Image 1 (cartoon, helix red, strand yellow):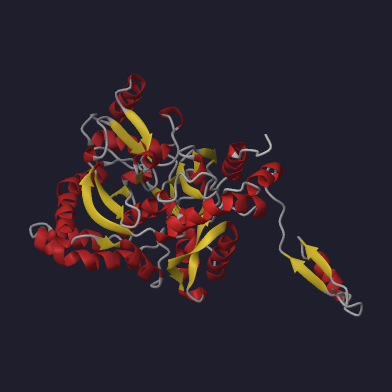
Image 2 (tube, one colour; image 1 turned 60 degrees about the vertical axis):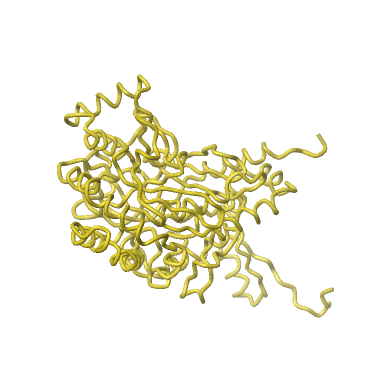
Length: 466
């Protein structure tokens, strides 16, 4: 009981004007950081929050995510993983008719790489005809235990990192990183792009496959934890992680592929983002460990195809919930500007889904020079993500926050209750096919995707009184 002599206090919420006015009058206040839930979610929130399965299901999902132990175990040709005639792409399912410029450019480049067309026009015509006849299948990477950065196109002759979760037994794949500039993943398909991809096919892939056979599994979780403490956030900054991986690989590259070792090591050393793709596969295998838990409202995938932004939720199987992809706000290269930018694209948001990337920006002050903003903005971004996540990652820690674990396990109900959307940092692809990268920045997913997922969760709750 509050004593009668205790001064009364006024609880204030929302804009700070009321709190400031009362403080000027010496009235004691208690400010509360309250936000209204996302529009149209109130009834669904009540139903989902009352689901008796939810708490235990989310504890299990978050526990499986944070307990995953991803190891890099090999490099394999995509033809060993894909059915004949299958091309993978980033994001939710999409047709050629709705595909963005970068997605179309990457598919055209893949057709040329595979020798299925003679030039750009021939590639597009054969793609359209093949898709219509069912001779070519266009499928999301996520539906084949794979992730792909930006356009995310994977064709049979490409090589893939193979990552295994030693805790839960899952496996995930991701293509090898081409470097920056005009590259296939950004929709470029010029002669220099294809020449590099053919070298990766003929030299880099086989050399890395032989290297990992000799080196044995590499503990990516430990490597990523160390890279965070060295200034990476493991989405748009991978300099430390790439250096650490190169250190692990170099002696075995020299031994396993002496004829091409200098080329391979020079290529990796000159590409600060080489680790990104291995890290994406590690994030994918970790979030996949938390899939298919009835009643769980935890997000297990966020992905974009350049047209749609989609999410998948543990308790809802492989269903996609989408909204329009937004254009990132950031810094542009050379003379490029917002008018040149394509809407957000790529599977690399699997890093944020697992508690890295934008969620770990407080660990990477240097990232703000790449995506814009100030160091304080990066810290605020990470702190805000604790409000919409279920756990703090025990291995991925942020020195600047007292070695607090990164926020991990996005909860759809917390997104709806707070109105806070996940923070994503990303590269920006040119909207015209063949352009390549035009910048980098920050983007927020569309609220519609999370609202749709919440409504589906509500529909899946069984009323005990029915």
